[in-house]
Image (cartoon, rainbow, N blue to C red; front, side):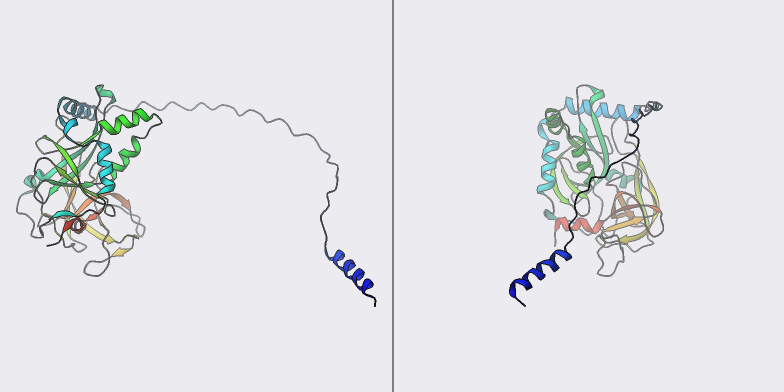
Length: 329
């Protein structure tokens, strides 16, 4: 067979295997679509006006006025500076030691409550209706100049101050202050962020005036232990002092960072403790005490629903995490 004939047969076979799509003009018959009809407007009922919280408004106005009338705005760090310190002091080791408080205290609960404070984030304004205040709970440790509370209120307020108006946003960050209010209603300025435990959602604040400290137990209590947690109500409307009740509960279980059940006395990481009571809003940063020693074994963070039994429980950070922010003996 000639070479030219072989090449021609190969081209013929190749063209038979390839099938290319070609556009075909097909007439379309039918009726044109109808014009869309306007959607009828639905009138939604007007929600009832939100009831005014006179106690909250009174406390907010009182704190705002006390800040504006004092020299605190000139001597304490701004909210913007505190947010910067939160980032800079993440995992920072305080050059002090925290004593072992597993023996607890013999003080009655009324005297233990003197170690509690209201952590108030205040954005003052000359117009009382324009001022804002958010409250959490805390307690003193160490030599009394350090206050433990939760870090998430700082981040929530940082998000709340964001605005399309850059001037208003900077004004809020500049004028906002964080103060602690003792059991007698005395306003104590926050000097600095001493340390920020990111994983535990904890922040340790250094304050200008010492407060009666609570003993901290470095050893996690076993599940089933009877515990007390401070359930914070609304702070006193005239002074802002902490106001609430001690609620007895039971330590239900521990969890690691992935939410798996962990056990004491093993190499399991104890990242979260859960107790059967449900703390109310504003209790973030409150202590969890072991009975009968009244030593701090945890810090309240909020409530959550456990997956295995679908029950609402309170959760917090084990107190042993606080020792990670201090020097070891």
